[in-house]
Length: 216
Image (cartoon, rainbow, N blue to C red; front, top):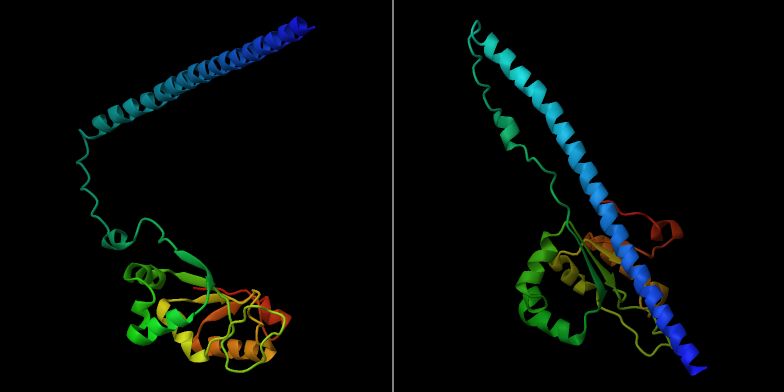
């Protein structure tokens, strides 16, 4: 019984090895056929393009004996100034953003450069669109949610941190935007509108919350 089981394992291993080798040989065969077909088509295409070229050269040579050569075309300055490729568009996205006491203390001490590194600040400002998840309301009003362990709220004046960071758009569709109720959320809309920062994911109406934001 044990020998029969061992023989079956050996036979199974042999069949698997044979199948793998067969697949490898089949791949090699297909690759060889593809390479030969490609080489033949390439040689045929090359021979077809060579003949008209030589004929064109001969005709041009004969006509040049009776006609003077045409002057070279002058480059178009306008064409040189036009970029050959379309400019790239840079989109930057950040995750949850909250202004902790540590962040605010640094901001009070030396401004935005104490909050973000020089290189990061440069990239954020240079982007065509910079978006973050605004994980709190901008308000001094509202009632703290009684059923939450962590609740966030920031004075509206600190929206300047977003503006100085180059943020163009925020999403408000998160679990902290209603930490202090509808009044604080309404203040958030007004604060962002006044700062010229677009927002998605929340609004005074469903239509406003779902409104697409476009940038030119």
